[in-house]
Length: 119
Length: 110
Image 1: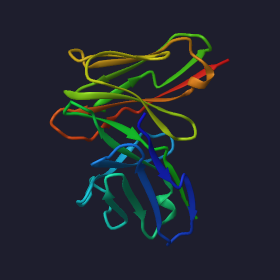
Image 2 (image 1 turned 30 degrees about the vertical axis):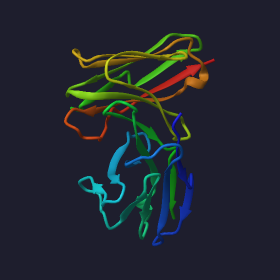
Image 3 (image 1 turned 120 degrees about the vertical axis):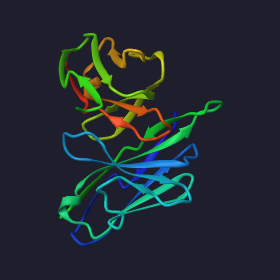
Image 4 (image 1 turned 90 degrees about the horizontal axis):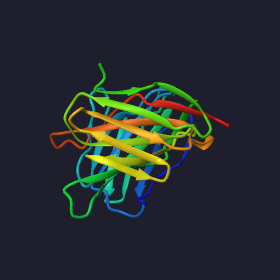
């Protein structure tokens, strides 16, 4: 089946530094990728929609200058948490839409997530 | 009120039991997803439904579009099925965004 990978799977960084998280669709081209954030015992919260070759669309309340998203190719989107603070510690998950053959539809596949801890 | 409601919130079962998790939604949808999230955090897409029923191994997902309701069934449950099961819908209108339920935490005891 379709696979979406994320790297790294976990990262610890110091407050004030920036961290880049990669999301790759391994066996399909994804024109649209999504970035989610999940706090403990809560559901996924959509942060932004990333379209290849264009600027990401951020959800209300998500700081675009803090969470930089780049979708440089049809198989790679990156999320950079800039000047990270302890409150940015969270589980970040990406997903990618895989077009379904012969249908005007797609299936969404999720990455395994990246756990970010900011000390 | 959340647009996607799941029940129960928590479910404990004995190995071998038949399990049903329910999802009700209040908006018109173009698709409904069932997702599984294990304690480590990774999410697995189990099903995407727009009508009828799908089966994969011991998992069965059904959807009734008129009643705006979907169920996820697990037959012959096993401790490795312990996870959070999340229902998510894609509302009609062309948006690719998903609206998530809060999840059902399933614990299957040996």
